[in-house]
Length: 442
Image 1 (cartoon, rainbow, N blue to C red):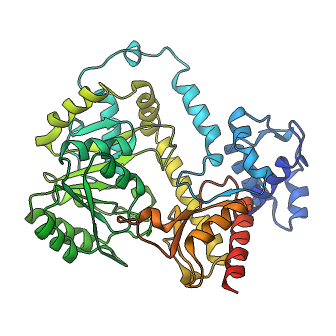
Image 2: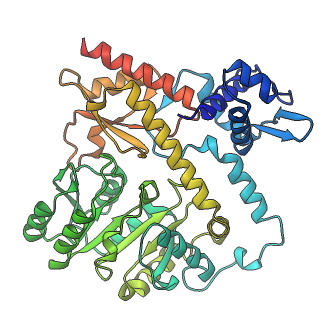
Image 3: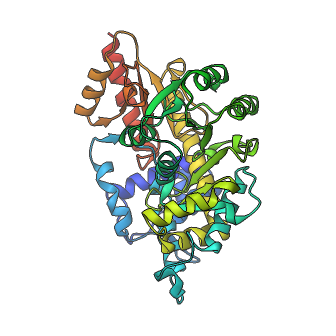
């Protein structure tokens, strides 16, 4: 972790415990540099970061002062004040950009708002909003020729439910990764479909087993999370994506590519959808990169299916909220959305580095920028009991059983690294979890 980031986290902690009160003046760059045995330049970077996060405000000639807390900031404080850690929920580290989001929303509506945002729109949403969605999708490697190929949904979960409902029938088989996101399984079960797991290896879904499942079970849909897969954290290589596309091409099935973590990849990786655009649906959203509260999903569909899907969206919800998508559009067009997603990626890298120093490296799977880790428990530890004991001690973690397509027992747990507001509190919680692991081992 950079020195200035560590100092910034320390100052936040001192603000939280009342050492630096609201409105109080912070030490000068030189004074704090002497205290932390560093340079004034490093302190300047720390103060700049704190200002960006909304903790302090600086004035030329006067110095830096602790900023009055907004209700947004206060909303996350209880977790810092108690011995509680939520390692169970996958979301952005909102503490680092709530203030920015608040400012973006204020700027969005600082001028007269178009009346069209408060009324019905034609088809399934504004073309301006779809253009922004196209820009978001293209930024992460998807080929999109026209904004008309982009449909707006109330988040990725809404897109998944639309596709499963429209392109399968009750009783149909749907092929999923053997370990997969529980939200996918809940939709499949609720709609009366049957999930069949496809074997995974260290590179992700196995094309050979997918072909076997397609040949024997004739799935209506194949669903895959190709980047930073939940829960295994695996990102498919280009070669593996090509192999899966080749299998899909051979059989009468559709692919749903749920790529909501593409922004965490170190470089753009061409989606599978690029290889089979007329047999694949591609899903992205702002929920992980920006905020779960912004229910903005972008669904790229084959040209032949646009009208079919549009009709279902109009039938079920008529249209998504234009107001929410107006905020998203302004953030995308101003590049702020990409800045915030890069910031979350950076925070994830820092959290992964902390995890590497505390947990035994050979016990978990992760990438350097994943939001979570897939932790293997020792054979002598019962997963159900471990999860329950962790909860009693203030730590919420996700039982690996939840991610098994057939609800079988799992010797793994998933740890989210991002929902805990500060690095210091996160590190404290991880140390406590490691102590619990060590106690159970012996």
